[in-house]
Image (cartoon, rainbow, N blue to C red; front, side):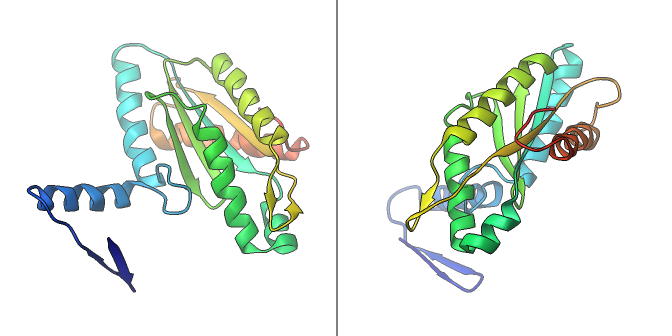
Length: 189
C-alpha cells in the first residue's frame, strides 16, 4: 500500500527484502513520468548518453524521434485539462505498444515525447515515425462523451559528427519537429 501526503510517501511493505523493494520503487519513481508511466526526461538523457557512446564506439546507427501533440493547448482549452491528461496517457499507451525492448519512449516535457532507436538509421527512423503518426491519427480518443481529434508532428535526427551529444541530437530532432509543425502539422520531417 502507498499513501502520499504532500511531498511525503508512506509505503507499507512486508517480507524479507523490504529495503531493496523500497529503494527499487523509489528509483522507478525518479525515472518514470507519473502521468504516462513511461520514462521521463532525466532517464532519457542518461539512456541517450549511453547509446550515443555505444553507437560511436562500434560505428552503429542511432536515431532520435521528437514527437509533439498538435494543438494540445487547444485540446486543453476546449475540452479541459482532464481530457488533456487522458490524451497524453492514451497516446503514450498507443505508442508504447510499438516500442521494442532495446528502444526507449520517454516524455520529454509537456506534450513532447522522444523515441530513441538504437541500430536504426535516419531513413528507418522516418519510416517508424510515419507508422507512429498514422497510429495516432487513426486512433479514437473519446473522453466523457467527447471525441477529441489528435494528431502528432514528428522530427527525426540520426547520429552524425555534428550530433554526437544528447543535446545536439535533441536540438536537431527538435528543429525538424518544429519544421513539421510549420509545414502544416501531422507530418514527419
